[in-house]
Image (tube, rainbow, N blue to C red; front, side, top):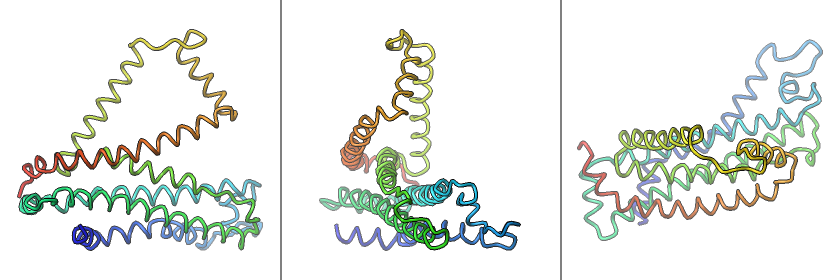
Length: 269
């Protein structure tokens, strides 16, 4: 098991490094853009202050935009990088060699799942440190009080689990059908479910709401929720989502172990 983990880390080290650098590089590019010639407005205000909303009196909105953009880039890159981990081992000889060991299949699949989770952790740490750096710059350059700067660490945790949730769906398809076919089958399956649900929503019977109309009741619920009355349900939903992701990730691992040999038979070489 240790050897397989070392192999994965060694084989994919460049993707791990690039994932760790995604958020700070994104922030650096943003800083360089506002420091280009002509970035000072006529009234003498810096472009950084303008972009972060100081001139408009909405300083926090610009800072939030930077945080969210860097977080999105980091987790997106980490998710895309994790999909390449399986492509590198799509070789029949390696697949049968792995299956020849008593715990070879479980060990190989387990190391992949651990590495995917590790990529999510790298993204989370990178985004969090980048946020702290941006917060410090906001305090030093724009003079914003530290207590007035909002942290998005809770949102980063949700993004981490969202990435695991997406990977727990992706990985069994990749293991069973390979990198290319797995993506096609996944798109067809998810697309079929989406189209089927859309058609049912248009023509199928829907539950009755309080006002006799499902969509009106749904809109009324969302209006009530948006005014803060549904905050408890939001936290409850997040907690349920986290547990579903954890349990689903484990079940996805067990399913991938059973599908491993069937996927090896489809490899080209």
